[in-house]
Length: 453
Image: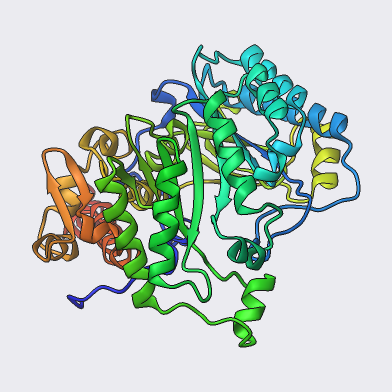
């Protein structure tokens, strides 16, 4: 294992590319999720946009017209169905993502929230977030969403430079972004988050520093910073591959990330997750549900979920994906109550892999208590405290294992995706060893049978 660590390409991609593992047997592994309180976060996907940005490869659609009443009815029905199948008693948070959910009407948001509250307990004050684009966040629209039950906004600013916004294919200008954030802060004080991209083609270190300073003059108490990833099939990736735009150097990306951390921490922000910064306690409750490997239900075209189907007698968590294309999804919801395209029961090892991959994204890491929920028989210390890859990473200053649990140092957090292969390999090896019977046991049993014992 090399002592030097490279800059990550995209940390968020790691969770979607975990190695397979696990299998039948009575090995030490996660406790049945039926033992846990039946709570979950809820994600609602609005798949439509007015235009596709040049860097976007999300499950979004640009159509001449949207039958919002039909979409609303299907979102409501699927939410009710999945809450019934999961037997979730309490929804901890709701997140409307997309796409551009701020293009939906407040009545659609209200209808979904009413359905959730009717099917499960939605506590007063539970975090309800709406993603919004500056081009669809008029003061009247924001006021309508607040009346519908939204109490937190996540605004896709992406940049405060008009030339960069044009390159990204965004609809809004820098001035419109500023106006949107100011309006949102007036209606959702302390609960307005902004998204920024860095590592844009041709973006310099000085330009990024200027964007950060401008952001600090504008922002509320939560900022999400994402390194731009050139996804195959997008217009921006084609421009870079064709030589029309320069690809950013990895060293520059690392400098930009470190600069952002330094500037934001100095301004009072807590770097509580790889891409997330908050001050005054304004952490995203919903996103913490993902990073803590808690249950979540995905509603809408292409939405993902992780939950137990208690109504069907399930006792293990499933990975579920809803049908991608909106029309096909609606037809399935209308015929069977939900549009689930894929469902896979996660093995004990796969659940621990997800917990490890997601939990290490946060500054709190993976607590002993959380690990015990998934692995009551094999502790964090037993897996990562013995000589091996994790011990070496601790000695090199990338990782900490103590009474608080397992977590990355700041240096380790910045290069997490280069650490994960070693940690996942150690996890697989230790669980594999735990599955094997003690040496000689099988032979002794065979000998006993031969002697008629």
